[in-house]
Amino acid sequence: MTRKIARMGLICSFVLSVNTGFASSVSDLLITEVMANPAALSDTRGEWFELHNPTDREINLRGFSIGDDGVKRHSFDTDLLIMPGEFLTLARSSNPGFIVDYVYDNFTLANSGDEIVLRDGLFELLRLDYGSGFAVAGHSRELLQLPMLASNYGLTLASLSYGSGDIGTPGAAGGALPPPSAIPLPAAAWLFISGILAVLSPSAFSRFTRNVVPTPPNVIPANPNINRVPLNVIAVPTIVIPAQAGRSDASVSQRLLPTIPNSLNFFRFNRSHQS
Image (cartoon, rainbow, N blue to C red; front, side, top):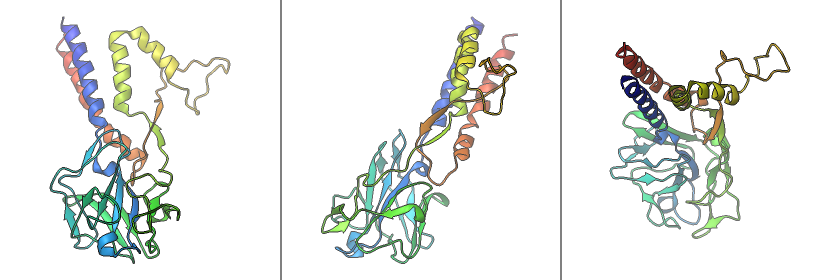
C-alpha cells in the first residue's frame, strides 16, 4: 500500500511540474503591427498598435503598464484578456477608423522614433524600439519575422486599407505571421512521460527509451548496421511551439528547469519513508 501511495505521489508531482512550466506571460506576446504616423487622420485620433497572443493560454494585461523610456506611461487597471491566437488593437482614440479593442491615454507614438514597452512595475517584459524612417505617413508596419526588432517590420501592402484610407490590418494577421520555431521538449514534460512509464511498467519504459529517443548526430554506434540507441545516451524529442519574442530558446528551457528538482525531492522523500 505504501508503495502505491509513493507511486501516485510521484505521478502527481510530475503533473504539477508540467502545468507550471507551460504558464504563459506578457513576455510571450508579440507587437505585430504599429501605426505611428496616420495620414487620413491626425496622430491624436489615428495612432494605434496591435498585440498578438501566439500561445495556447489567455493572457491578462491587468496590473501591467505600457510606456516608453521617458515619462509616458499608461496602466491597465482592469481585466484586459488576450485569448489564444487573438489580435488585440490598442489605440489613442476610440475612433481610429476601425472598432478598437482598448483605448489608452498618457502614451503616444512619436514619428521620429520611440519605444513601446510593457512593464510589470519596474520590470520590463516586452519592448520594441524604432527610429527615424520607421513611421511612414499613412502606412502601418507589420512584424514579418523574429526577433522583434524594428528592422524586421515591413510596410503593410498598399492594397490593405482601412477606415478613411490609411494602410494597415488592425486586428487581423495581414502579412505573414512570424514562423514557429522548433525547440527541445521541456524537461518537465519529458520527465512526466518517462516517469509514468518507469513507475507503471519498467519494461515499457525501456521500450519507450529505445524507440523514441533518437541517436544524437555526434554518437556513432559501434556497429553501423545496428540502429539501437545506447541506454546511457539521453536525448529529448522536439515539438513546435510559437517563437518567443525577445528571448532565446535557451531562456525558455531555463524557465522550465526549476520545476524538476521539486519532483525529484518528492520522489526521494517517499523512497526514504518506505524503508
